[in-house]
Image (cartoon, rainbow, N blue to C red; front, side, top):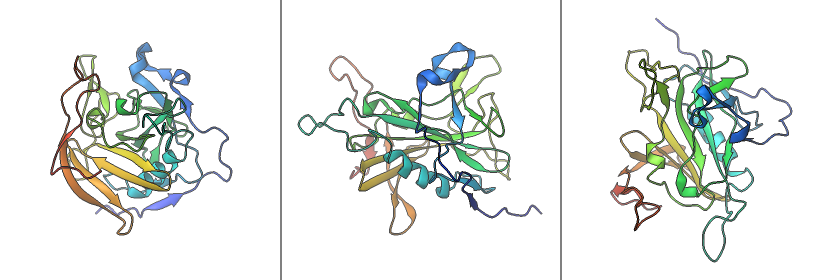
Length: 257
């Protein structure tokens, strides 16, 4: 019988790198396609650990420090014009990739985008180039921030890992997968669902959400150290002539953001 590996947090760096994030223009693109950017990993942040665990799902001990660290990056929170309530020019979204090596769970370096916060994170669909294990690590989802404290957008709900098909094309999937096309299964042979995560709210009172491919939405409750199921959401209407941003997600019950 396989022995369970205890969850262990490893702080691998005595001194954090002076680098805070990468710009998308710095990344390698698979097949020369900007949509297939490859993120470096792991994120060398003093508060974002490597987690040794054989759990099938991404451990909260990795997710929560990563979400908190995202909120502390330049322009990631409270970067709003007080009159328009829109993001200032210094506002930024950062997107990180949650992935697994043969030995542990890790998070990639943040990729900074100067984009409208309703545009969702622009994920590294080309995967992660881990400094210890190389490329083609299994990807289990993406986490990002909203700099103005806004809720999950319709586009956020659609961002999941991508993999290459045998025919040569690429497709977004709703399970953990390697970019080369291998779906991840747990010890019982079942596919492992991917997740999305959002850090929003204010720097001194952040709100953390996660959602699965079915749109089941959860909010982190710090007092209980757990996720509360709060709603099921589906994307609203896509952008159109009368609604350039599209409509917000439709949630049942209605979300109290």
